[in-house]
Length: 96
Image (tube, rainbow, N blue to C red; front, side, top):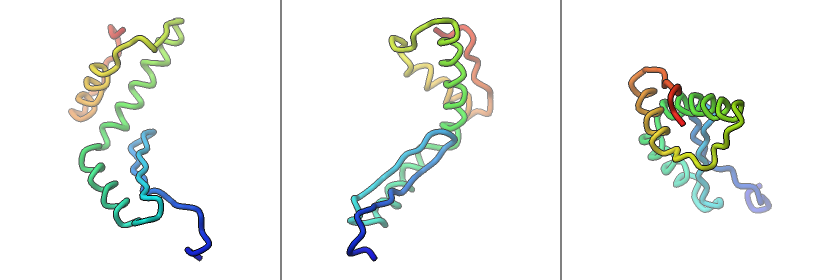
């Protein structure tokens, strides 16, 4: 019963533990799906693989009592995604 509904379900893209949700507040579910599909063209499966590698790296830092808040993650993320896209495991040894 759309007239009485207050719930809107987003269009969701999942890549491993990474989820991207798009909503138009119910205005156009088709548009939300279209936007999700455009995002899927940019965010491939390598992002999910990189998320696993980055989680392991972060957990290792925490296990050694290090904070991860001051680390510039951008180059580490880019390296993890490039490694995953190339089918290589991301070596987190030697990273901050």
